[in-house]
Image (cartoon, one colour):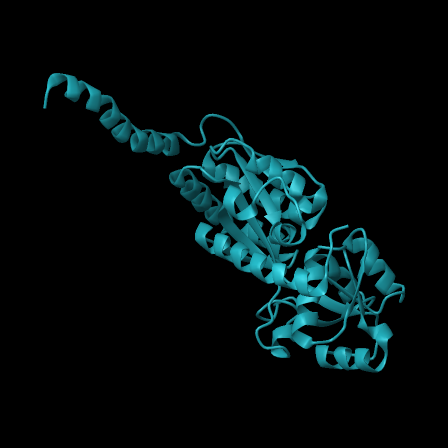
Length: 326
């Protein structure tokens, strides 16, 4: 090779060698540069916020860096998601979100980001069942009896949720599709008002997350009849899953973390390992248990697969049932 050709090749070869070395050094140093921000998709005090705060201190200890919980609520989580999707892909801005992450992509006609293309999963933190509960006066103690009531009296087909596009709404929409029953969704601006109207006997049933429902079930103000998870919950062991009646039904609310696409894989791996380790802490487990969260600590690939699967299912449900964002 002539010297001129050799000097032309050397810079390109150096870049090829330097790129993986730089990525490795970045992962080795991460997160020394600055605090890591957990961007929560909902307001302080909600379930997602409580879960993020339960994890943040232990995650900080595992990473050796401060972890700041930052709430960016609005548009069903899309505001926070868009913010993270447009952030630097360096592992310092992490989305902390729930199942609305998949629902928004299926339901909203135009989003400023593509959920599957612009974000990569880090950790499937845990699963939180929805509970189907009724006013104590409703003469049903399981799903079969409740569906039968709806066939006799259309009023019993109504179920309240925290709003159009909420995880409870889609748990009900999938239930409608699989049961072939014409259920009637009654959306509220939040789970609190939905539960209040069911406790006031304005609407016969409610679908919402277990954590928010448990105090009302324990006090007798609501009567649980089924849960949406694949397996029965230790918190409600005597209540059937919907899947025990409708084979294949499963509609957990999940909690997960994501980073912008392009984040180096070693950084994603480091973030996942630290999160998974934090989830083994007894204090974290106890705090999540009180919310009804079953810890999973699932891999980045597992979370990405779940999102992809849900977007396909929810897109089909939206089309078949004509669900529109408000």
